[in-house]
Image (cartoon, rainbow, N blue to C red; front, side, top):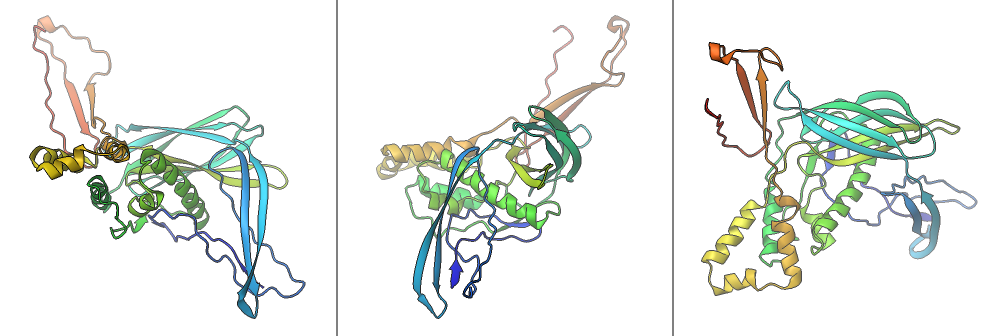
Length: 365
């Protein structure tokens, strides 16, 4: 017999196919099973959330001498996925250099057994950080904390996401077919990632990204989302926490925290908004009608694109004040003594320039 089932798509080295791949059937193994022979086929199952899980499968097989003589067998298994780790992270800019950041990582043990945290690995295309080797056992209801330094790297990533924005502009204009628009290609990740880590990361990232996009753009078909959106947002930072559960047998695994935002958010759909506003203001009756007299679903589409997650902006300016003598200053201003104060103004945006003005109060204020 020839055994056919589903397979994962693969990646190599520090590169990743930056595309969303929907479930599809492909060959895991194609070989002849002799009479009386059996084989085992290990399959790694990733569950995105705790709770009951039903595994359903369809094994398709054919006669060795006639591949058109097909038969099928259904497979099913039920299990309950228990919570294990709860991951959180906060990012702050480091004082030493403009491109340095500190990621505060918090790992909470939400299970009923002790878990050993082995390492924390930053994964990103835009930020580099060394894997942090750890050997810390976390007991139930305990929390482990650490700080991971990362640094922004000079890359050729298109932070404005021109292809994606172009496809979204077509959808806003009422062009439903974007199947011929460019798809994201291959993306290079910072650091040297093992094949095992990369495979597990790809699977987890696919689930996270599809769920996020379906929640953010409910009126866009999933087939369209998977075609125009990349697997990784250019400025996303993900964390991989490797863990071990002691016992016989010993269990090992990796938990992921996705989409940690290091740099301030900036709108990538502002050009589309300006185009729509200009068309409504200057266009003829037909153009105005196209945008103004929209159905409910079309209006939801425009709102999620123009006012949704891709339009968020955060003030990128960080200001620090430093005096030479430390935090406390003793000076007699009436006697003409002065204090040297340094204002440090940093633009944390990786793309947008910022115009600033420092306005200090006068002596009588």
